[in-house]
Length: 239
Image 1: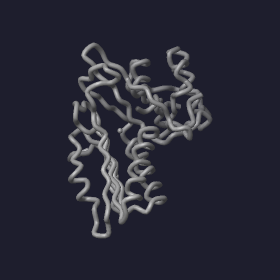
Image 2: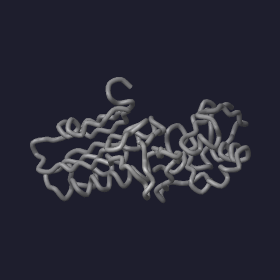
Image 3: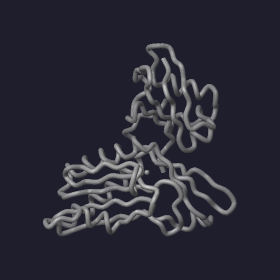
Image 4: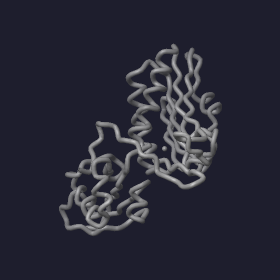
């Protein structure tokens, strides 16, 4: 059987490919895909404790069975169409999740969420700063596994809406180049009372940073580096 394999962030740099086709015997397992590339690229062996596997745009375990035409992705630790968004999910309840290569318009997002019953609206803007540990930053560059990223944001948002007394929640992440002073990610929560909105926005950004497959490369005057992070403890690693 033949499957499609995608590589992101630092894994892409190690392998030197954005995607590949791999032939496996019938009855193959997801973990065999990782083992195949780890044998070819020893650096992946060293990273095995932090790489996560996805099968058809869902986090999965190495034991998951594969079928003809499956899409597999090797994901390093996370550090986020037509119109302004490349991918988006607009929920019937009014929640909104999207990816964009344009400047995020927080005010427009807020106006779309706010309702008459709301007495609070909390907006978190994650803004690009001009340095990391004293090293001058020129700009950031974001890439992600786009279909999976927006689905994961929506799953996080639904869970937060179900466990906090909020009216609506939105998450939007930038892709591509983000200059100093620009927002790379925005999380907005509205609610009748302020505590729920604060708690929901904080949980939203914290979970997004550890769960959504988005990677950040920081560009300096003297070089560039993928920013290392870590997956949430609930996500099973490749090995």
